[in-house]
Image 1: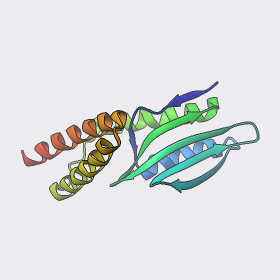
Image 2 (image 1 turned 60 degrees about the vertical axis):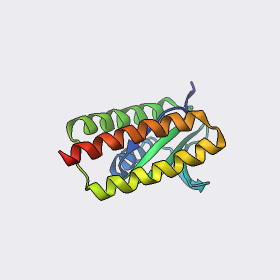
Image 3 (image 1 turned 90 degrees about the vertical axis):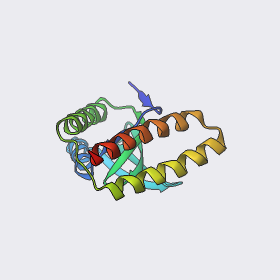
Image 4 (image 1 turned 180 degrees about the horizontal axis):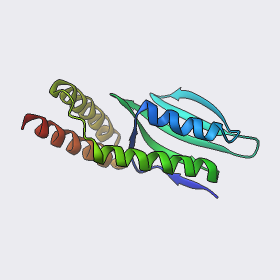
Length: 143
């Protein structure tokens, strides 16, 4: 069994990430994390397999951008957590201060410029989608 996603984005709060970590740790998995080029790499492993999740830190959340899962236990915990994230996002859209949203838009525009210069169309597409959401959030905060 192997699941690999590297063309998507899921935002998780610290609490939601902790929920997933505790769930797999209760099933005798170990956790190791490190940082590489501004990304946090979370390894969830036991004697048989190593599962790798890659995150980017965002304001108020972690963005899960790459998943390489080889264990059904970790896959179930991840699906449960991301389902909870989706429910949470739909039920409760938090209106953040306008300055915070504007600052996040500025950061995403900087990332967009960098990936445009690198000709990385996958990240450009994802960043544009994120920017669209941020602009909609900004418009909602105005009304």
